[in-house]
Image (tube, rainbow, N blue to C red; front, side, top):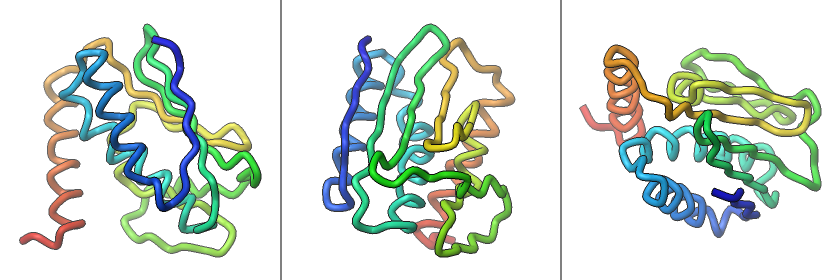
Length: 149
């Protein structure tokens, strides 16, 4: 698969979900769609919280290691302003992108290279304990986001 490179604004946010769905479908990894979507969309939301008018660029590649996403704002580098805090409390500051806990829980690798956040989802197979842990994270995420008891 060649890389997919898109640029979105807050108003075209749903394009990301479409791209993720198509990538997962085309590569026969539909069962990863929710895991990938929650993580990628959470990073993008955090970037829009920092600058609502930003144009966010997403580069997606499917490699032998798995599915990778590089997310950044080409006109406004993040510099050192990424908080990798894994706390449950989301305290936003005016100059930091705060990555929510589900990003760390669902992505196999989260990194910051000085200007972008990169997420890697391994597709080489997953053990049953890791699959069960991720299922619980997703269930808790949707219960909290939808205020379902």
